[in-house]
Image (cartoon, rainbow, N blue to C red; front, top):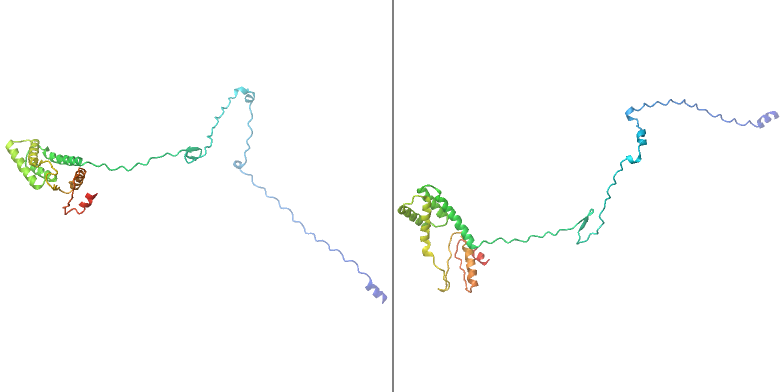
Length: 254
């Protein structure tokens, strides 16, 4: 019985240490060999040039000296001011004063110059009638049209045609140029009685009536005549009687 308790009370043996588990290492895999790069991709190492014996032995004075590059002179910085100009880059730009052209008033053509131009144009149109080689009815028709276009009036045109035909027949004129001279004589004799001097102050009041076709310069002539008389001390009264020109008074005021 005591031996039974002795067995129970006998200390137990220490526990055995755990045995480490050894994990087998896998064998190393062989490294695959990389393919060699092509010849064109291989870096090219330039070998230093090998001096030849002749170049090494050449004297120093045989080598030509390189010419020195010219020195570049840069302009000094100039501070910009309101009067000297502005600095753009490295160049100083000076402003240029451009004069503004003034308004050129239109040239006023004098009344006599306008009259001369009109007479010259009328004379040119009439002269073109006598460029033919014979005197016939067509010449007289062209002359009638030219006189009417020159504002000669129907009555005056008919009178001149009849007078020219009579003179040509009586004088035995055979060339168109001679007919032109006959026309000049007829117009001169027709206007001769109208050559009277304008006397201002002989009769009071002095009445001056201006008549003419549209665009002949009546209103402009009246304005100039009024200014001339007023400058010489005359008292001028203007009366507009043109029923087809409502703005005649306004134009005279200007």
